[in-house]
Length: 215
Image 1 (tube, rainbow, N blue to C red):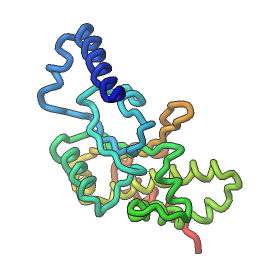
Image 2: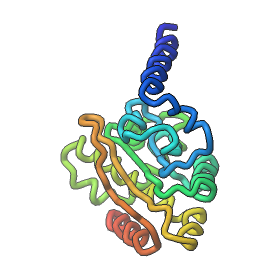
Image 3: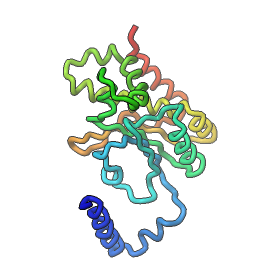
Image 4: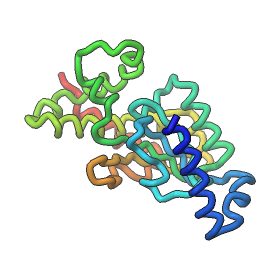
């Protein structure tokens, strides 16, 4: 019970601090939302979205799941993406993975994890595609970090293939797709791919992916 009370205490303290500095802060944001970003991230509790991005309420439309997946058959993700792109007209769609991701770690092993194994099948496919590249790593942590990165790139590619994004690109240059990785050890975001805005960049991303496919 102490933990839930702490949430209410922290909430009141935050509201008092914010309204003391800006009395209309919450009232301004209670109207229509006009976010600049759709953030697709991992559900991991160590990834504090607003803290790591420095954004305020109203700037970020958010979808989170285990290992920041953007699977073409996930109706939840597709519904969020469609609303963000076609209704909110977001300028940027960010896929953000993070090092030490438990979902990616589970996908790299052979243990049975139950239902979540179905969810992680796409990551295992990515590992198989890049088995030649990954076999070069002698350091287990470095290999783990690389799979996290490859997973992010694959999700950006998945987004680029959706009819939602393809149709939006036919109408104009937005949204731009970005792939980032968050490092839990130092709190910094690092770019993997930025400003994917059309078929040519998607094609190059796919070709980079194919270089990792084994014979």
